[in-house]
Image (cartoon, rainbow, N blue to C red; front, side):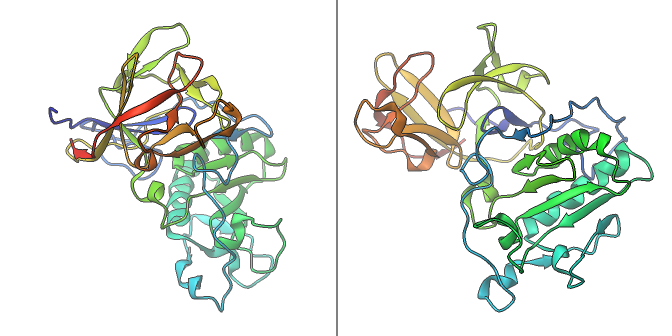
Length: 322
């Protein structure tokens, strides 16, 4: 195949990022380069809304729970303190626990802190809950792994929380939930997960279906476009395209090429992108689940739009760098 330098990353239900570098702008709301951008118009999250629109501990969001981290466990070294002066840590336990988090969580939080100051001059990001070592959260909470934070603004202005949620999405948190009137809940994937390390990407030349039935190249998507996607149960839905968050002009990636038969369908994507497949060769569509493209095997059924049922997967190419 011809070499493709434009790459895009898509997270389930419509979060896409374009691997194309504009000469004067960085992507995402964090530290950039070149000229400073004016704050863009943001669509606040509604109360009780979460993005992406799947359960927190699924592949499309922050992934499965991997076990509680304690100060005496080997995994405690996975946590790193965050001493960012632009973030206020409530630390009601007075142990510094709220400052401890995984590196991925720390990076996203620091990026969000910049966005908050840009959005509301004089206001800082505030963390009310970080790593939990005292068992204050529900069973298998990602707070026990340092992968979740509960946040507010320093002025505790509840009218800002919907926009704060949106800023958290743009900062790159893998799951954002406008959980209560008192705080926003954010979490990230585990450091060792394939998705956290590489993400799921399409070539920039890939096309998507819009709500009006037309098709558009991923690299040409605009905020507000309604893109055909799938929800956490594999049901088709139209999801708002939010933004491009990663940019990369020259990187090469390993892509998987997966094809079906009659009619021939082909998709090109990276190993950590998600596809919906049936768990077994039955007609019970309730057994469909999301798995990484690298785990799809010949003979499995995958869901192919716009058909109403999955097709047998009969061809599977070995990954190749594009």
